[in-house]
Each structure stands twice: as C-alpha cells, then as structure tokens.
Image (cartoon, rainbow, N blue to C red; front, side):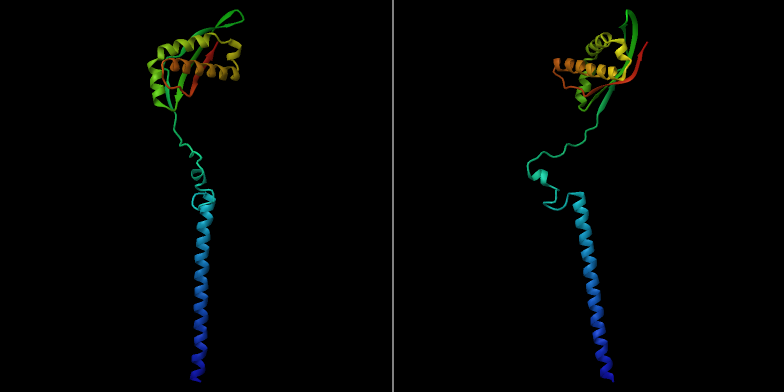
Length: 170
C-alpha cells in the first residue's frame, strides 16, 4: 500500500506544477498585451504603428507651442469719428500680441509712429460700423495691417494681433 500512495502523490504534484506554469504564462501574456495595447493607443512605441512614421517619411515634425507675449499701450487712442454729419468720439485701449518678443520691442521703439497711424485709421472709420462686432473685428484687422506695415518699413518682425482691451464710442 505504501507504493500505491507514493504513485498517486507524484501525478498530483505534476498537475499543480503544470497549472502554475500555465498561470504564469497567461499573466506574462496579459502584461505584454497590455503594454503593446497602451503603446498602440498612444501611437509612439511600435515601429510601423504610426509612432515615428512622420520622421521616417521626411515630413516636418509637429511645431512646438510657443506662448504669445503682449504689450499694452498705456494711453488710449482717442479721436473723433464722423456720423451722419455729427462728430462722435472713439476711445480705444489696445494691446499688441506677438510670438516673437523682438517684434514687441520693435513696436515699443516705434510706438509714436504706430500710434499716429492707428489714430488716423480709427478716425477714418465709420461710426455705425464701429457699433457692430463685425465692424470692430474689421477695425482690428486694419489696425494689425497698419502696425505690421510700419514695422515692415522699419525692417522689424511683424506682430500677430491687435487686441482691444476697452472700446468706447459715443
């Protein structure tokens, strides 16, 4: 009987060992699939899965974010605007936005010329147009073109936008 007990214990140990090995293989496989799936969804780990294809095909890399910098014009632009034969007043507080800090430094250097051109641009606007959002956007675009034209004449880099901080017409 002693021999019978020994032969039955050996297959049980073999079955437990086989079960442990299978469990370890399944765990390792699950971890590997998890890592591969994560890299695939993020798109930057496996060759041929969309990670580095742009660099390999010669396409330019995605541009890095560069925050804008601003300069505020301390004094408002104040001028008269014609409206149906009457003179009205317009007062505008401005800020200039640029990605290149040199453009803002150049704008500050040439600020007297820029202010003069902007006052003329504001004074030549139609009063009724300035009361609409589209008219104010149009004025901002014209002012941007005026500022960039002055900076271009001086050989300086361009600014990105002219922003209204306060806008009053009466």
